[in-house]
Length: 241
Image (tube, rainbow, N blue to C red):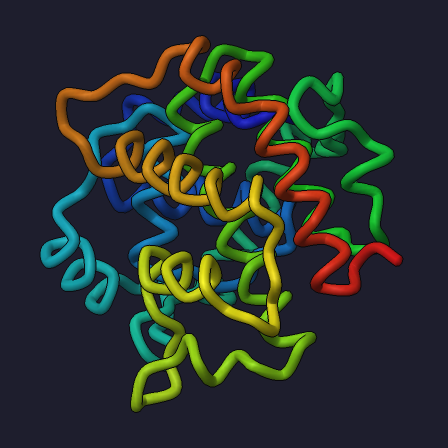
């Protein structure tokens, strides 16, 4: 099941902000094996669903006081076990055919079939978002895949400490990208160096700009470079050999 169908089948537009998040969390947990989330991920989920971006301070306060969520380390949260069971009972029929399928418009299956279910699910969601005209959601997911693969590449090369702060948290993507463009161990190609900021900004605009709406042409013109960059990072992270 894709996100658009899930939203329609659960009548998500009519629910409160916190209930929207509860259902979206269950959707991503069921389809992408995401068991916990950060406030930053919430913003990308709401953007992909075309919901208004929540006020992060208010959202964090409401999450902390809600019985449906449990606070994890840092600013991460997960669904409470009782709420999770309730959602399973309620949505079992809706999600019984939850296998994601796509037409490989942006990332072809032969590229993302690398043995990682997580990478496969994100790649399929990128394709599905684009194919179903959810261009803001597509841009946010493209940015997310870029960030994930950059971090995995740094981890594989055992140089991830250079993109962490004093508390051992990873830098925001902008700072990671700046390092990646000049890192002599990562050794990005010239094309990747010239493209990664484009993908980052495209996702940023869709996630954070109030009056911005991503268009098909914005994504269409970067597909070849995005595909090449993702393939390069799949090899650098050793997910493809």
